[in-house]
Image (tube, rainbow, N blue to C red):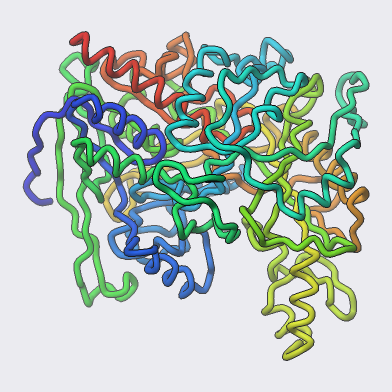
Length: 620
């Protein structure tokens, strides 16, 4: 290792530059505080008009969500085996031999700006009951948050104004959800797509009984509306913050080429203009504590760069060169996501004070997708990838029996299916002609011999009729679902222990998610019945319903609470046993609800920033 790089003292060191880190850095830098941002990844090659990123995506054979950004010195060690240009990307998450759980199917990026480079920007607040799942619906394995909706609502407003959110206040305040909004969204909602309009005509006045056959307890009749409503987005419906209006390219994932969608890199740039310092390609190894093990006195990190090395053909003739870095600060903020936050603490031996809750309660939003061909053309691929959702099952008495869920009506046909289920998997039956095979162009050419006019006509027919329903449900916090340090011999190319995963979606929650999946399949079929489809394809068949996808919503591994034996941080996101350490992001969620987490992540970050500023001003 090279000689340690000395650093000046900062008021605040922030680890991570995603939504939480970027918002906190910007707020504190604007107050003339000395802020250092440590980011494990590099900076995306934007250039004028983002042409380099577009070119990288065009050249990609996988068309994966991270393909525009997989360049030298951009992505660091991260759990996505598709990138071959960064150290040790294959098999980053470690599963021990004879592992009997489920694979954790969500991933994230190490890059300045985080995963907001390729998010849909769906920006949904949690409901008041989401903060009180245990006391409201008596779900044993759930806990109530130590804060309520009223505590966080002012920060929802601030975050929406900072990031730029378009949406309808009326849709969110419907009596069913009892959701007070003190201010409208900064921008009106984006226009609902033609796909959405067809759904609205078919099911706007329809209802579905929430009761589930075979439920473990009697369920009262509860009629749930199937009405589609506009999705709030961190996407511009009018010019905002110097950025243009969305022009409807349907490419939010993997890239918004015109910056109409919010990305955390915007607040990183603002923080830098306000005086913050960014150190990229700096992977935090561990924290230093004082002699009493209480206060954080420094942060050890590893700077990595690529160098040419002809002896490393497996790395395209390059190798990672690593040097040590060290920084000191009055307050340290971990904003490194639901996997890396606990990993940094575990490598710092914080488990001695945090106990077994550190790394535990790993959650995602397990997802079901169903696909169909509509009888009439619905003309997807115009506008954002999702502009409406069906949110009737977000809340209700049924949550005593099965998980709540939210359904997105996709506006990009079958293109954005996370696991490429209908794109060449061969999993679904087909007609003799193969005309409705939910596959890729490769299937049509290779398996059915289509070419020329026949191929063009088939693709055009499919593209205009494709519809996808995407329903993601809440997952209960289970202590045994966790992130821990892999064995000492299971390290990445930077010499750091890999995350070991223990994770189950089913079998340890009393059937809560499995019953929800049964209901989702019924719900999808009912919606398809009303819209009118020629063929439909489900991810799996009865009776299991256990195939699932990840949502990329990694939650719960450093959760907040009021009891230090059951949580890692207090309601202000301050570590119980380390008064100058804050942990932010979705890792602090006690429960996951069903809302996309970014709105709550952003609100909690701004709330934590206020606490950090008060603490610094007080000198404590």
